[in-house]
Amino acid sequence: MKISIIGTGYVGLVTGVCLATRGHQVICVDKQEDIVKRINEAQPTIYEPGLDELLEGAVSKRNLLATTSLMDAVKCTEVTIVAVGTPYSEGKIDLSQIKQSVREIGDILKNKDKYHVVCIKSTVVPTTTDTVVKNILEEASGKKAGRFGLAMNPEFLREGKAVEDFMNPDRIVIGAYDKKSFNTVKRIYKDQFKAPIIRVNLRTAEMIKYASNGLLAALISYSNEVASICEETGGIDVKEVLEGVTLDKRFSPRVGDLLINPEMTTYLMAGCGFGGSCFPKDVKALVSFADNRGYSAEMLKSILKINETQPLRLVSRLETAVGGLQGKKVAVLGVAFKPDTDDVRESPALIIIKELLNKMATVVVVDPIAVENADKVIPANASSLCYSSDYKYALQDADAAILATSWPEFSAIPAQEFVMLMKNPVLVDGRRVYDKQAMEAAEVEYIGVGLAEFLP
Ligand SMILES: NC(=O)c1ccc[n+]([C@@H]2O[C@H](COP(=O)([O-])OP(=O)(O)OC[C@H]3O[C@@H](n4cnc5c(N)ncnc54)[C@H](O)[C@@H]3O)[C@@H](O)[C@H]2O)c1
Image (cartoon, rainbow, N blue to C red; front, top):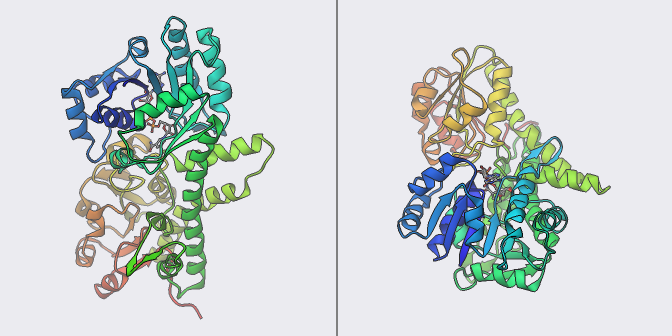
C-alpha cells in the first residue's frame, strides 16, 4: 500500500521504517528539514536498537522516502497516518500539532478526488478524533466524513524496544468511523503482522491507549508506595515482597513445570519512578480530561503524586547518609528515563539532578547516550553540573553516587570500583540492581529503594 506519515519523531519514524520493511511504499513527512534530510540519507534521527539497519534497507530499496511536502505525500498515497506530538502543557493535552496537521491534510483533500483515509496514531484524549479531527477535516476539505475515511490506530510501542514491538505487536486496535475506513487501515496490517485486530469506535480506541498506560503507571506507583512503607518500617525488602506477590499464579501461571513470568510483572518493581514521553503526560492528560467532564480521577492523581515524590525520597535518604549535600560531589548514574534510549523526557533522573543542585551539591551525570539531550534540558555549568559518558570520571572522588537508570554497564560496576574511585563510597541504588551483601562486604554504604535497616 502507499502510505504517508505526518510527523517523523519516535513513533512516525519507527512506523514508517517498519511498514516499509514489510513491503509498503512509505512517505514520511516532517516540517523539520534536517529530519527529512537525514532520513533520506538513511541516518536515524533517534536511537532505537535495530532501527539503523532497517532504515538503510528501506531507503536503499526505495520503499521509504522523506519530504517536507505534505501535498506530494497525501496526493500519491491512500492513507495518511498522523504521528505528530501531543504534549501536555498548561494543564491539558496540547492538540495544536494535531489540529494544524489535519487542517493541512483537509486542505489537500479538497482537491483530491480519490478516497483517502486519515488515521490518527498520536495519543489523543477520547472524543478528539470524532469531534476535533473530524470537524477540522470536514471544514478544510469541504467534504463530509465518509467521502474521506477516518480512523484511530493507537501505538503501543515502548522506546528502547520500538522496532521489536512494532514488528511483533500483541494487538492492533483500529477505531474506525465506518467500515470502509476500517477495511482500508486493516489492509496495512493484515497478512504482514501476526496479531489480533480489534475493531472499535474512534473514542474507544483512544481510551484503550490511555487505560493501558494508566494501568502500567499504576503498577509502578503502587510498587513505589509499597517500597516507601517498607523503608519506613525497616527490615522488609520490597524486592522480596514484590517477588512474593508476583508468584501468585494469577500473575505468574505455571504450565506443567514451567513458571511463566509475564513481562507485566516487570512493572511491579520499586525504583525512581516512571518517566518518558508517554506515561507522565498521558496520565496527566487523562486526569485533566476527566476533570473537565466533571469526574475527579483520584487514583490517577495519586499515581502522579507518588511518582513526583519518589525521586525526592531517594535524594533525601542520600542527604541523610552523607550528612548534608552542600558542597558534596554526587555522581548520578544514568539520565535516560530507561536503558536503551537517549530520551530524557520526564526522566526521574532530571528531578534528582535538580534536587541535588537545589541542595547545593556538585553533580556529575553520566550516561552512555543521553547526556546531549539532558544538557539541553538542564545545561551544564562550570560550578555545579557537568556531563560525561565515562562512569569512572563521574565516580572519581565523589562523596556519593545514585543509580537512576539501570544501564547494564552501570549494573556491572564492581563493588571494588566504587571503593577505589570514590572519596566516600555511599551508593543509592534507585533501581535495585546491585547486590547489597557484595557492596557491604567491600565497605560500600548501600542504600536501596524499598530497603532499610531493621527497626524495632
Ligand atoms: N514516543 C513513544 O514511545 C510513543 C509511544 C506510543 C505513542 N506515542 C504518541 O505518538 C505521538 C508522537 O510521539 P513522538 O514521541 O513520536 O513525538 P515527537 O515529538 O518525537 O515527534 C513528532 C514529530 O512531528 C513533527 N510535526 C509536528 N507537526 C507537524 C506538521 N504539521 N507537519 C509535519 N511534521 C510535524 C515534529 O517536527 C516531530 O518531528 C504522541 O502523541 C505520543 O504520545 C509515543
